Amino acid sequence: MRYFIVDDDVASRRMLKTIILDGDMGVVIGEAESGEAAIPHIMTSDPDFVLIDLLMPHLDGIETIDELLSQGFRGHFIMLSQVVNKEMVGEAYEKGVEFFIHKPINRIEVQSILKKTSERFVLKKSLMTIRKSIMNFEDNTREETHRTLRDVALSILNDMGIVGEVGSDDIVNILMYLAEREEHTMQIPALKDLYEVIASKNKVSSVEIMKESKAIEQRIRRTINAAMNNIATLGVVDYTNPEFEYYAPRYFEFSEIRTIMKAIQNEENAKKVKVNVKKFLQVLYIEMNEKYNNPVKKI
Image (tube, rainbow, N blue to C red; front, side):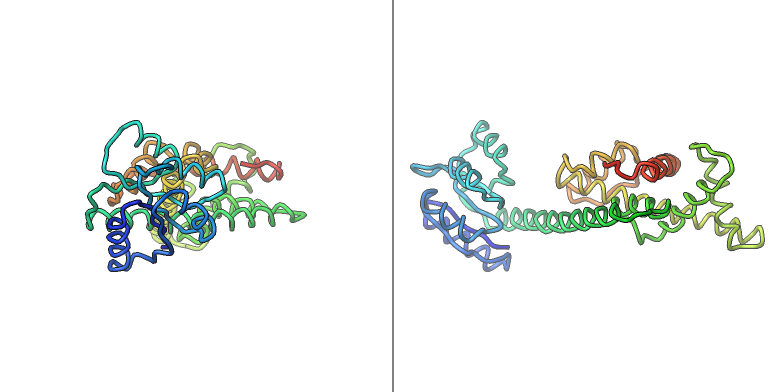
């Protein structure tokens, strides 16, 4: 990580720099004793994080952040403060401040906060890369003159980050079976029947079919659980993320998504959540058909 420190107290700047370097948490690419002096250097060096004192003469921390944002800076802010004023803290969070480091500076607190913010930063960059890949995939897919139902199904699964998961082939096979039925209905039959139909394509004995159908059920459950974790992660990083807003309430039990999100936010192991396979397959089957028949439809 690349840090820039803004603080009118030279001792605080020196201490923060030492903690960052000794903890191998990144590099300090610059420092300044005032907001006015910091702004041009920050805009030029484009650090990942700006550690900025709340109370400074002339331009305080919030005013400096305002000016940086108005000039197009898109980095992240961590506020340094020795006062706890609810109004000022609230205003700082509204400006995009991620965390507060309290003064006098404590090495353990600084290391803990910088570790959390850097982890979020890496995660957010990874998710942005995934989203760009998804957008490119969708753009290329829309340019094709003809898409099969399988292509559409894979595109949706790709949106949820589960193409290649162990049960993704089983899900697609079920969708293809549903689409090939003689009866034209959007309602899907009992899950047990679906698993047995798919299992019977490669197995001959009833024992083998029963064993494979149970394996299919477990693979699909694990894959849907992976989708829930992917969507929940998007929601933690950005609650207004379009993929999160679209898929979370439609394909899953939203209360279960919230449970996973809370675990991610608290850095805990997620509790076992309910996986509603029937709902997932039903919604996926309907949307696959709608997108196939109306290829320009967007999320």
